[in-house]
Amino acid sequence: MSDSYETIIRETDKHGIATVTINRPQKLNALNSKVLDEIKEVFDSLKKDDRVSAVIVTGAGDKAFVAGADIKELRDLNKNTGEEASRKGQQIFQKIENSRKPVVAAVNGYALGGGAELAMACHLRVAGSNAVFGLPEVGLGLIPGYGGTQRLSRIVGRAKALEMILTGKQIDTEQARQIGLVNSVAEENPVEEARKLIQQILSKGPLAVQKAIEAVFTSDKNESYRTEAALFGELCETEDFMEGTAAFLEKRKPDFKGK
Ligand code: CO8
Image (cartoon, rainbow, N blue to C red; front, side, top):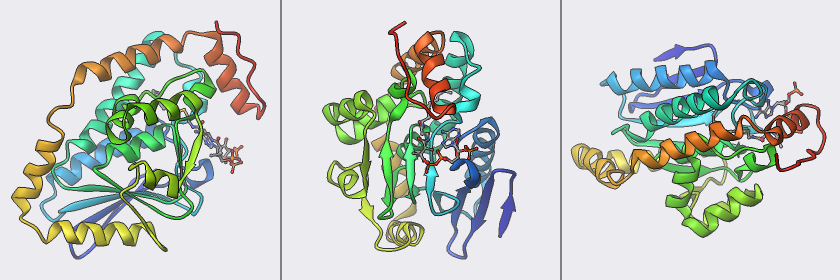
């Protein structure tokens, strides 16, 4: 079965494993409002679809999983709309995490900023040898705003999370595996590796699998996500944010003033 969206491809195989492919390869699958709306739509529909038992999320093309939120769209945000946009994205990503059907990210290239946050909202992550993870937001005068400050700390621990968030540095597949950001590394195709992992899970008691996911995520608190969104919004009113995003679009180094 295959459904098509404007920026997403949704397919389901005979085992009930759905694949959601973010499909904007010319912009390295960057998350604009349309993509986010369609991620919400597709996860609402997957939840209701009894033929679907598990989901793989991946990116179109051979270069990127998702290279982040669309920086061009970020430029127009102010304090209020920035906070709102962050909350909206957080709520969409929470839909993924709240899925009781296992969701595995198959990371095939750049997973930066919002892209890394999307991968972290999935329950498990499989990476190809060309995967690159990073939270480059501070280089744009921003912070992660789709739950990354919370999820990265939970997945890899606060010290490693802080190091990645404060330096904005990129790490490769092997480094991501070493710190536990990636569950397994695909020799060849990460989608096929994700499928194998899911097949192991689907051979277990389906109700137990659902309850296990629910139990593992039960301690996550909403308040910390609200704080992240409010801080993200505050930064949208700074000169550093205007400079950081302008510098990216003009393909130059930013000149931050701390204002
Ligand atoms: N947004 C918009 N366009 C993008 C993005 C992006 N995040 N990433 C890549 N593109 C575009 C480029 O502008 C380029 O477009 P064009 O061909 O029209 O110039 C095209 O994709 C191809 O990219 P490059 O030419 O840059 O490809 P390279 O191979 O030279 O570089 C990189 C690949 C290193 C991945 C580079 O594209 C890059 O650094 N991208 C941006 C990465 C980044 O900073 N991501 C974080 C964005 S901020 C974020 O995600 C915040 C999340 C929280 C938001 C919360 C509320 C809204």
